[in-house]
Image 1 (cartoon, rainbow, N blue to C red):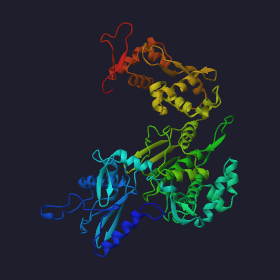
Image 2: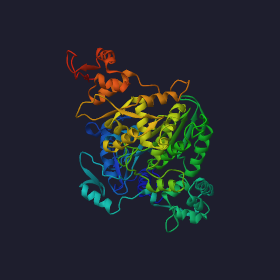
Image 3: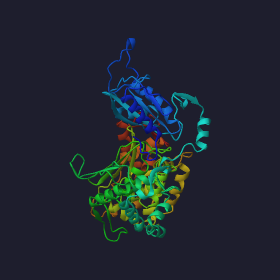
Image 4: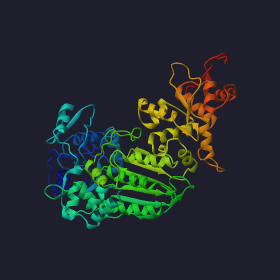
Length: 582
């Protein structure tokens, strides 16, 4: 069941209940255990009807009970397929479908572990619910378990419980494993990570005696037991935590695999790093550039993606973190949803918060990961610097979090261009890189579009624009205000023609990897984002004379994509609007 290495009363309650049922006895429900007959399975006269793999009535009933359990200190478990009097009814519900459905029904707040168990020939489901960090509402109410039933409480009471420290980081809690059980191989790997760090204090820590090393890493409690986080890192949970699969291309057979039981987490990480490095070739870039050579996927980015997949995952389920190394790309799928308010749309700048705080801190302390809150920034910077797409980080309904890295060909023309900026720090400036990436692909920005791309407010995006206005590249301005923007409307800026020519020249005789965006695409992105476009604005966007824009505007109008502000299309001040649904 759940990865909890100290005594776990929920697991013990489940085991006790299953033993009683196996002996034909009656189970007494309590705060941590609820027997649930599958809803919708009783016909007239109480006849038990055939079951099915998907029963939404049952899923809704169970979701409400899971919300109650999640709000309860320590969480709890449901045994599905058992009547209140301990009669074995059984269930045919599909575990994966049920887990995903409960996640969806609880507004993506609860990830449960669902397992098949068999008792006297009946198939049951054991549903493990971990304690929630924030209250989970069901039917606009907050409830928790008191004895053998759910009772409603108010939000203030729930939060008061949290303020009194009843909600704790499981990974910081003591395991039942003494520090002497740390695997020697794991300790040596940690020493290696520390020695490889440029931090002199880490180098010093690497030479400490093992008991002192563990103590200074906050990996051991005052009475000599490993924390749950340290148990994972130095001993391991017995079953694999990571499944690394190498394929030359999507759909091909695997050519290498790392999936080892009986190892510590740090041993698994080292094995994955080593195997991935063998399939991540060095790429040489033109002479004169600052980098010279790099791994196809930046090594720091690859490692951070893998480490994030174990550091921030849901450890309350036994699912593996899956690392798929496909050709020149990497996809890391980790169990559990986003946490603490993080979404795909704010992950770069949202205040960092982990469901496994002690674990993330331990991984950072041994220098296998960046400090919390920095890793995603570095991943985006490293990928954009080489001209790759930004990492894609999404949440699936399962729920899982998926990190995708695409690293096909290093964009040397882009790198040459970045090196020609008047500020040599440009290739390492995350927000500037993101803005330039958007400008070269769209041709223009305003504060609204830039803020969305940077995942910041418009006020925070303004200094980035001001920086770009003060920079030059190969002696040319980088951006210029778009002409023709009416008074009272927010400004927009286009990539200056000199800057575009400097980018094109960086490719020499090669076809530009960042070709100029199509004229139609520039016009449509602008009119859809800003609600209007004139010939003056379009000419400024395309570095062309406004009088030459009529044909392009008429073409878009003929396609039903824009419409004129005046039917006669004449006179000063004429502009175009996006059509409804365009």
